[in-house]
Amino acid sequence: GENVEQHPSTLSVQEGDSAVIKCTYSDSASNYFPWYKQELGKGPQLIIDIRSNVGEKKDQRIAVTLNKTAKHFSLHITETQPEDSAVYFCAARESGANNLFFGTGTRLTVIP
Amino acid sequence: GAVVSQHPSWVICKSGTSVKIECRSLDFQATTMFWYRQFPKQSLMLMATSNEGSKATYEQGVEKDKFLINHASLTLSTLTVTSAHPEDSSFYICISPPGRGDYYGYTFGSGTRLTVV
Image 1 (cartoon, helix red, strand yellow):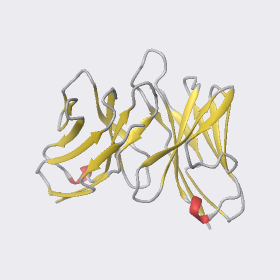
Image 2 (cartoon, rainbow over the protein chains, first blue to last red):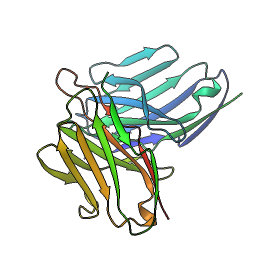
Image 3 (spheres, one colour):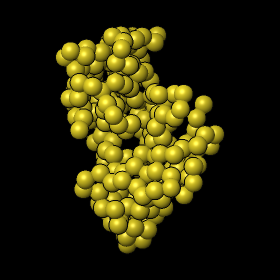
């Protein structure tokens, strides 16, 4: 089955700096890659996603890039703010299946 | 948009008792529901998949007799943790996969934090 790895596990940045979180996946036929933000005590919330036929997608301060050849995708957050502090999960949907495989999470701390 | 209502949001139970978690799709019909659990500081791991009208399928290592899943209707899926033990303490969340016309829209329940004492 699909295997998703995520790095780093923790990330601290100064407010205003950029943050980058990277994920790799094993199934080259995986076709959907969402990113979720999970705040303390809450369920994950979708913040951005990308499909396999697209290389990059941007939504204001958040962007995701996908390299299908290398089987990795990354989340980029620019101009970070303290409210960006949370745990971020990447996920991949395996081809032929409908369930999501999640990365191990990155705890992002934005220092004011 | 699609909403999955999950209850309870948190529960504390004594060891040996059973706890039922419900996920209801409020404005759509969910023929399938994924059940995940998340241990502290770990990722979400798929436990089982419930399907309306048929038996649930469990992931390897998940005890089907301990984690009873029922998909009673197109709008209700339940997970019952039977004879709960402290090691079952976890965050349980249901996720409805995309339906017709929306190949990418996953709908998350809000999660249930179970603490077994």
